[in-house]
Image (cartoon, rainbow, N blue to C red; front, side, top):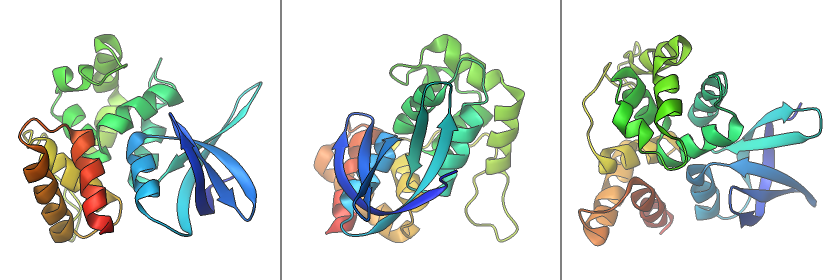
Length: 205
């Protein structure tokens, strides 16, 4: 069972990439967040992997951080939410953003994820295991870091974009500065995806 790979991005495509490990290309399905993170950095890097085996295929799902892989594992346990829909959710919401939406029962926000739909969004929010996962992420840890208050109010796309960069390994002050510059350049109508992409470019400079 493959749990992680260390190599380089060979090429990307809609919904994933080919990850080269010593000349062997692994086809990974990834969220947009992970693809942006992988393509923003050059050289050898590590990607976490979830291996799913079905009757007719072995599929590898790649993640730039453990938080996103954890969210993916939680989502695919929800009835009718398979791996592809889980990636759709994680392409639009960071793990922290998803936790806030579920803990705060923000049905409209989740239903607005393109390709998800209101029925599936409601199923995710109403699933007891997802509520437990979300509240677990929303409970402050012993050191007071890396957590968010339960049912935290929506803070906007910029705050979620900062959270996404922090989840990808950057420090909060640097991430906040990069997103602030990106937001100033893109304007008030900037989407979460656009802010993350531009923020990653800022961090790579």
